[in-house]
Amino acid sequence: MVSALKRELSQKLSKVTEDPDFESLVILQTVFGKDFREKALTGKLAEPTESELRRVDEMLNRRLRGEPLQYIVGEWEFYGLDFKVGEGVLIPRQDTETVAEAAIEFIKNEKSPRVADLCSGTGCIAAAIKHSIPGAEVWAIELWPKAYEILCENSKRYGLKPLLADVLSRETAEKFKDLDLITANPPYLTAEDMKNLQREVKFEPKTALFGGPDGLDYYRKISEAWRESLKPGGHMVFEIGLGREKEVEDILAGAGYKNIRHINDPTGRARAAVAER
Image (cartoon, rainbow, N blue to C red; front, side, top):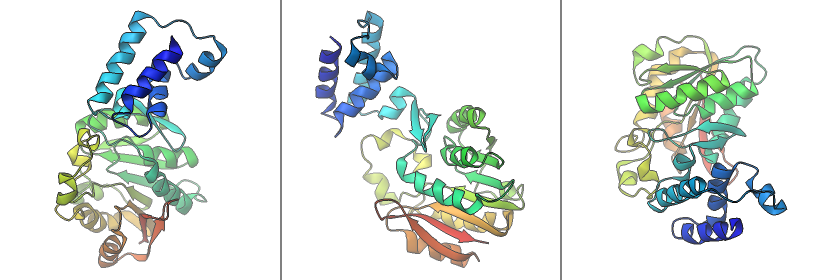
């Protein structure tokens, strides 16, 4: 029955995803446990109960309506760590690991670095930094209440310091001094991008996606407001949209930063813009 259930799920999910086998496995692991595959292969998996089958069916129907798999299962992995996710917060994406890796590289030899992660969402960048550098003091700053609620749960798990505040406000920035590092994955979609969102992305909060008419509002405002919060020699690390590296680098240069450059992700695309105060 279990193998038949897996085949049925994959067949139905093929209507909404390019990887139905993976997604069906994730749903079944969520319902029956992470060791679902091993138990199924060894014949140690008990026959599904009516309650379990109803849960599988409910998750399948949500997915067929276009809801992101990550929201449905309620947790997703980033940088080898598990994060609570849900409606109202941006889903962690593997692309962003390039930003976390770049940030960690700047402070890996510091004894007790001070870090602020802006537009923190789930806190995935902040947690990757804290996990890699346990002695770091890492603030995770988020404005929107739904996202902040999820951020607080992840912060407890990974030892972050969450703060509900507007990162575009100079008043918020002025609370921080002598930071070794500032990271941000800000909203950076343009008005045109927002018209052409994929079906799944439409479920994610627009506040975490829309970066103003040209997608660069947050880069301009953060670069200006937060420069004095960095100590001399401290670093700013931004995630950037596809093909926007030159524009973000120019914004950083105009705000008085130095040693400005971009870092490519494993596919060769510019993914992070970095600069030094």
